[in-house]
Image 1 (tube, rainbow, N blue to C red):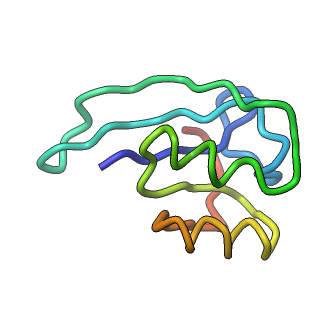
Image 2 (image 1 turned 60 degrees about the vertical axis):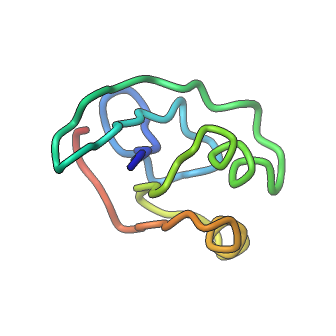
Length: 88
């Protein structure tokens, strides 16, 4: 499973579309086996769901995201968890 946190600095961001980067954790057997940073591409409406799918993301954690992004992510089989805050 690959879990992406939308972050600014070392904190989960409130603004999914304009985050600095995604910190991606690969989890196997309930253990983190890899961590990598993926820079967020320049903001374009509707781009991030496809971008996350191309990076094999299963779950994205974020403070908030628009309803359009939630629907696009869901259609691609990615789970979006909003309301996340704090340090990664």
